[in-house]
Length: 269
Image 1: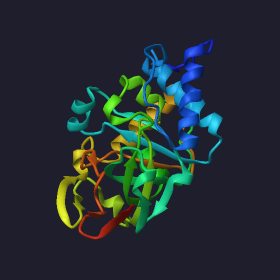
Image 2 (image 1 turned 180 degrees about the vertical axis):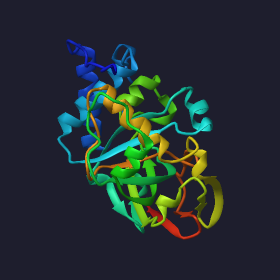
Image 3 (image 1 turned 120 degrees about the horizontal axis):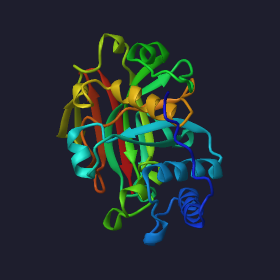
Image 4 (image 1 turned 180 degrees about the horizontal axis):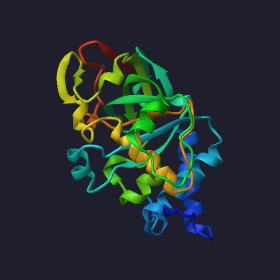
């Protein structure tokens, strides 16, 4: 029997206040300069419940989910021992080549990821999901860049549960070309990230939990334990192979996946 994580029996004034602050920060595209300690969720489950409340209050069409903390390096940096996740929104989806005004972005971090779009639901059920189930549910995979943004400034980050409540700093999602041979395996694909024409980061699909589809299986299990699932047409970003790269002064970034699929972004003042 799987353990279903239940929302808090009674929504505390603190969780309610945090949800409203985060929803308003999303609406206005502004950061919360400081957060009172009493508003930080006491548990990871409370944090994820607040993220659900924020999405409900915004009412924005969902894109899907982001997963982070999928490499040992990032988990060490964040001081976590499991991946983390959050809700993403379709209004922040873009196609490569994309352009963004620098002033509209909140402490942007560039993360090279695989964007996996589902062909069918991965619904709530009692028995665990398998990797075979996950592969059968996938429609397509794109090369992608997440521009991660946090509603808290990088200079004054609150404890991690507050960041989880903010959707694990979900931001903008730039879709590059499709990776047509994804069924042959993503683990062996090399990824090169260039900033203003200079190579800054390199990674490989296997850096993400050994296989970039493993995080998707992990997320399906997390949602199952909440008594929930994933839906057809949702896109899941499966975690960065190149870490979290600040780009406050960059003019352009370009990621190349497997020497063929690319994602390009320009920034302007």
